[in-house]
Length: 380
Image (tube, rainbow, N blue to C red):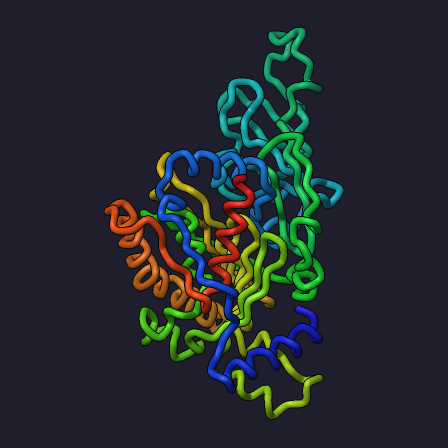
């Protein structure tokens, strides 16, 4: 976030704090319960959001050198991202063109080629087919047309975006809709990957995202964990096209009033939540970055899968640094797994009870209304 934005948002939050207020929507928003339960809408979401949209698959630091790769299956398409010899990233479908076997799992580094574990067909870092045992058995099968299928990929400001549909192009700057320069200012190109966890919950994927979109619940659900750190029912919300930013204030934010504006560091006194539409929650947590990439899990609307990652500005190279980041990651996971997600799963069950046709987002929860308006607009 640029410094001038930090100053402007800092004044805004201090005014909210003094007036005991928060960003208010123009009206209450009523969101249909069917948004979380309808099989037809769920099928449409999978096509629109998880096949045709650019999706964040990680940070540049996860594949820093030529030959480094990572895999991502969350969208339903097996994605393989590898850094090529020219330093550029390639996105490929992780499927051998001979008989369809997966080439690699997880993440790692290849020296020269990806070698299929079934019949040893091999591919270079661009996905070109470079080797077939007993090649004479495949006369008439051109190697040039049997490379790995490429996917659209953009690496920008330390973030890696892939569209899971071959041949689909995308403009990531336009997709960020005004957040491009703000994200650039964080310098994510220099961050380091600490850890990623794979979580599954019995709740709709959008309900997971909803968890991060208001501070109204902090002094109730999180009274012993997050409420001592962040103010409840206080947040500065702004929409950026389909994306949004919600700034939650730490209880230290009053310290800014004792400093000249040129020294203000808003990031240290807030948690800055971005929704990078449709499914990524990116959170600047003072001294580190957290990302939540949320997807449907299975064939019903009632399950979600997410990979949760923590990134640090400096490499965790000492025992004390590792203990520090492990405490941060543990607080993050304990809070959501022991407090947020049990409530979320009970909400998902309640949606099927027939108790109500809609849920209500108050005027003090503007980010929720914005997000779900964008969902409905994108689905047509």
